[in-house]
Image 1 (cartoon, rainbow, N blue to C red):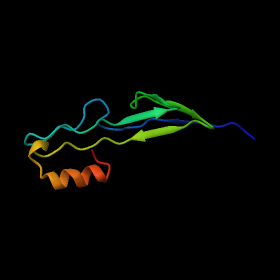
Image 2: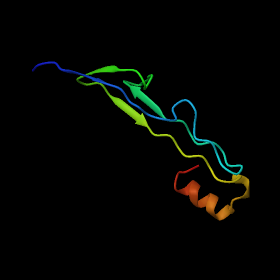
Image 3: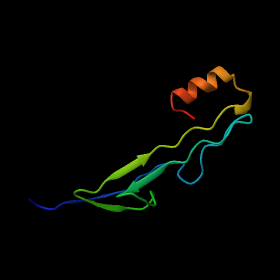
Image 4: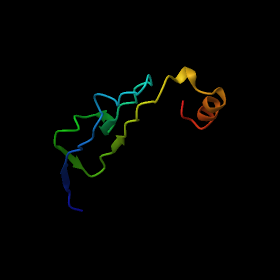
Length: 84
């Protein structure tokens, strides 16, 4: 079977600086792009070969308002859903 490679770049945003929170909310989580388990510079070109594994973690948005002021029932619901 012939061996092929692919040249690509990942123009992802918010990998170095997460989205800021608003009105006292916390910043979001940063994104990440990995090839074979190693974080890469997503703005550069990379050569992928058959069997390489690419993982793209999208960044989270910033929060709105101080988390400590949220209704405790909503906080418990979010934790149960795996958000916290």
